[in-house]
Image (spheres, rainbow, N blue to C red):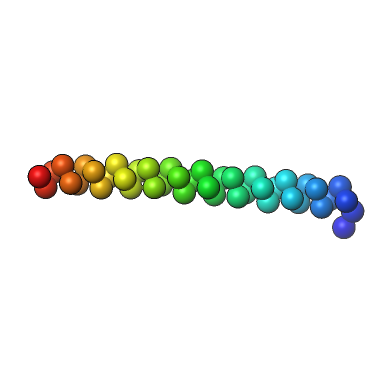
Length: 43
């Protein structure tokens, strides 16, 4: 593997990690909102 290919691989992996973090954060936010909505309905 050339140095250039390694750099592209690292960039792709970093982008993949950033996308996973963003999706996880969005999912947690939605779950938090759903949980609050359920709490309000039971009160």
